Image (tube, rainbow, N blue to C red; front, top):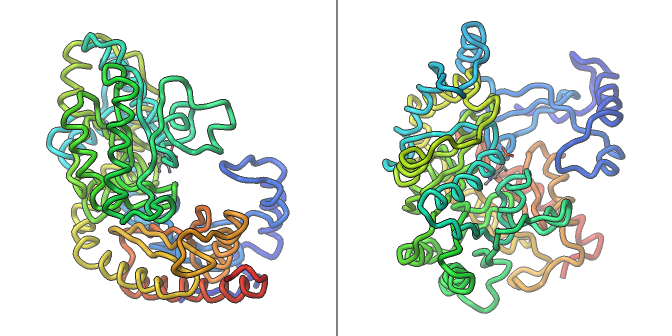
Length: 471
Ligand code: PMP
């Protein structure tokens, strides 16, 4: 059972937390962090984890409702992954896959990925992260159209509030305005269209009408920019970091209609949705999409070691390999042997324990029932979830989607911090809370999760009414 007692003596000693916080504040620049506010509070120091539970340096046990960063599919503490990595490190800790060389784990992982991804995808290009996967996409789609003798087809269409990583290409393809401002992005040749975010942007339209409208924005952009200049459309099946934006049911079918009459590539970013998150192996299976390229990362290794990839369809491979010469692209650690070994063992676990089927048939429906029941809370404007990824929209006035809190993000952050105090990791995006737990979460852990989420909403509601922030 969780212990939330706080600061008692533990194996690390009284001063351990403070020491780590001090050296961290002095020397460590964190990703996506405002260091002034971090250092005022001190970093939370995570020291170990098992299953779905994290332990911090004060001995608190916290239920990890975000699966690390959407990546911990099979749960923490899998000895067999540790063993597979150790064995690989002892046998061959490193060798590259450039210059007509391969090694056993990279070849076997590529074969395995061809098996679990959609049937028309039979080749994997390995990288180390989701961002690098999207950098690879950026270069590969342009190279593809050069080889096709259509060098004018260079523009990639993405969507507002999409997330495709934080490198120059990833940030450019993504649609985060705040990220674009830092570093003068996007680079030329990227165009963004509206997102299918009904709760936030649907206005008076029904979700179904709005889904059609958002999908037709793709056709309008192609028309306006010229089909002969468009290389690809890139999208996440469900936007993750943008706030778990689950598109209306009409959206993907309409996008498919648009793409059917246009000669542009479809890139489906599966970095979050891949490897079981939606109760199917890939988001493309869930929405019945036929991607030409599919960036993957995160759940590929359940985060045990960094690895990503781009799954390449036969259509693209036939051109890039068949017509092309050398593609001048790759990384020292493309297909790192230890990372491939971790990914192979992770996929073996997913298959052997039938985790994806179990999510689809048992645990995701159970989690959804609990999560969607939070919609009755006075602070919640909408609860949504597909598979094991969901969001709660927090609102000052229930039933009024147009009414927002005065300073966007303040309530989300406050509630997220409450959740940590209640022993549950959720993440805040604007004024919503998002959830994406390990796929191995049990029904009793789901009960615990939903109870803690409800307590968090109650605590937050009390605090907000004290501050006069509710209608
Ligand atoms: N694509 C998507 C859809 C993502 O959610 C992320 C990371 N959250 C990335 C790409 C980038 O992955 P990474 O952080 O591994 O570079």
